[in-house]
Image (cartoon, helix red, strand yellow):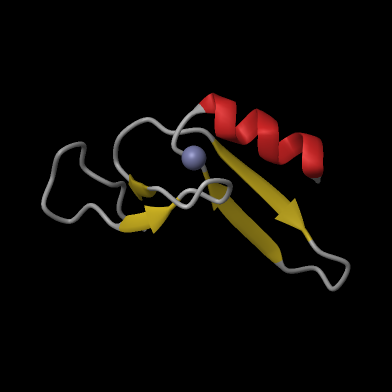
Length: 59
Ligand SMILES: [Zn+2]
């Protein structure tokens, strides 16, 4: 698995799991993993720590 290049053209676009803003992976963004009851691990990406904190309070 290749590491994302900061500012590179291969940066993937994701959306903030809390507010829905577009997040470009490859820059520093807070992330959170969540394991469901059936063992699937989901990766959540947030545009900033405020969104992560708000999301964490609801989960
Ligand atoms: Zn956000």
